[in-house]
Image (tube, rainbow, N blue to C red):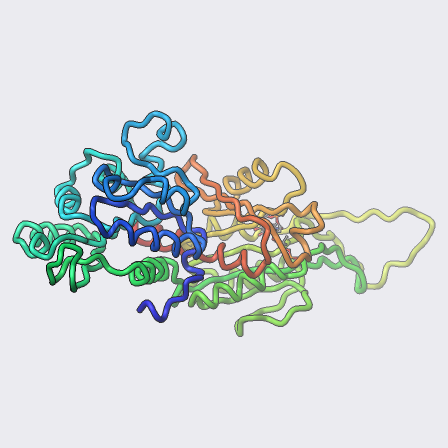
Length: 416
Ligand code: PMT
């Protein structure tokens, strides 16, 4: 498997991993594993047990990860920065490498007498262990019983490998090599990030609301953001249907329906919504349309011209309250001020699961630009909103990150 997965595997980009290190000579290999995870774009918080610190100092891992290593459950200074329960919730994966026989016994029996064991109990992220111990300690009945229990508790058991051991013995008990563990981590995220076979309906581009046969009310959306998302969704295995306003871009997906007005977009969305697992509203839909469209070109005269505008349907709000609502409804918020407040209010008012807020007042992000910067707001409960900043990047790169997060949220929601 290691040969098939690249070091810069995008499934690891932005992932939050706790790397737990317990007492064992194999701890030195964890430095290499950590380096690989960081290089692939993951954020890694290292947690060391007392035993681990007898083999290597926290400073080594701090230098590699860029984060102070956590060692104590009751350290007031670190707890003030991020409490252990918060840290447990932060993690997308907890990997314990090396995992000693002693730590396996603790984990199998639900003990929580240090930071790492407490994190394992407090997290709802997958916990993976890479056992490392003397071959006889590994083979002994009680260790095998612990392994069985850990397996039954859905802990992921990666290894051990077999071979010559540091103590000179030969047999099973060597920690898996860093490149193999890295590949396992990447594969694990691929499994949770996949949208294989999932139906996604996505809107993109502007809408145009006719004033007369030659004029319309429109906006600056180029479709770049939505089309990049369609491509990333397709790459993640989703069946994508793109409902697009008028843009000058080739569709990256076969199933693309072109519309002009908000009403047409509404009709095309609702003709398909019942079969969708995920809906994403990236289109810049006109909020208003002209009440009476002139049948002939309006002629200029010396008087002022007044148009009466009436409201268009709010497509995404209606999708979110539809009786057969998709599992995940994702919106975008185009703002020119108070990004966080305005986008949070939209997330709640429109009943969305997630909103991608972007500043459209700037020339380098938002409309028409090839780049964007997204503040992602996610509803984790009725009143609680989590946020994640996706820094300035190309719309294509950002789309991969957004799709990763959408897939994670979707799979989490489905498994509840
Ligand atoms: O196309 P590009 O040039 O690449 O630019 C990308 C973008 C700036 C258009 C995109 O990133 C973006 O922000 N899209 C949403 C634009 C918008 O209409 O935002 P809003 O804050 O007005 O609307 C909030 C949400 O409600 C959006 O999901 C929108 O699709 C939806 N909506 C709005 C009005 C309406 N009548 N029906 C809707 O479904």
